[in-house]
Image 1: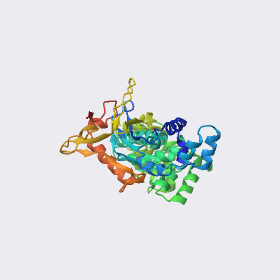
Image 2: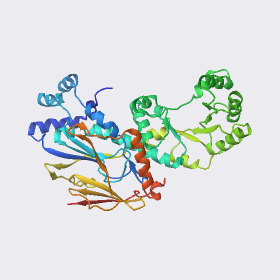
Image 3: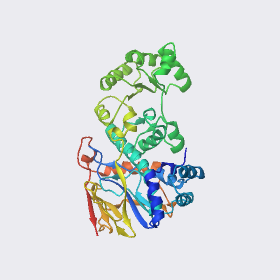
Image 4: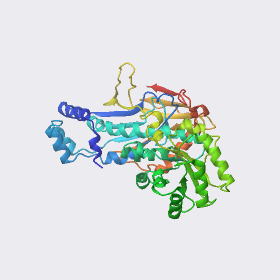
Length: 426
């Protein structure tokens, strides 16, 4: 994969070039990543991608080949090219833990660095966070709708090849049980799962031959896809070939709520009472919720997962909020910012239910019982902070966060953010 430095936008290079020329490149600055609002209909967002960013930032390097090309294209002058040749991120980054919930105005990530050092990371940070947060936020809603039934992420064929790996990771963070994406299994340790597609059945002279071949290779615990032809006959054939110990059947088409009931009745009548039913086919949180009463054991979700289920970007922005210790603000209509470095805490009832998020600019919120600080270090002096959580820990953290918000915050219908955010400043 090419260097992450090539994710830089030209306007960032333009700012660096001009700042080096006028002497402002080294001014101490604070940048923040936040969202002005949640996507339409959403009551919370999920922080995802920060676990990937640490290594991506450490790999952020321009090669001599990159710089020579940019000089020939007159994107860089010699001074800027020389500065970029030695570029290393040497600042500090702190932010919300991966798996944390966020709301409008939450300071998800804070970058402290000289102007040129910090501004150069804008596109990298936003491309990762806007994608991964969107995927995890949509996937978390699907997990809630599934009420404990496992979901397999199956969206690799519906997105960019690299986005597919990141999406599988974000979906697992959100609570999905596994992914069909092998690269995510190798790179991030996400459990992988999958079964044969319709092509495998069509390859063989009969459905029975296809099922027999799959069972011979994988054992009776496998999952057989039974809707290539007639679903009822496919189920009968599956049990005839595998016996009542067949692990599962998968149904990928039709009115799943009706077909699942019919499939369960047929399986039971054939003695396959322990054979599970897996359904797939353009599922999102709403269609999963509609199957709550159906005898479904697991779901496979693809397109909706990798597209954020209708919200393909988290709409996060990266803004300069402090220069030389002085707060700076953008005053454009509808795009106003709050200047100064922020400190955020979440307040809870004694029962553990979250009631408010307090974000303080240039001061600290007054301490109250059951407050929980929301920011942690990621990079200190350009080096990874100690005790960074792994993916499994972040996944568990999100599960705890979802339990902490009021019940209304988990509804799939449109509504206000699950908890209010109060902004205070010195």
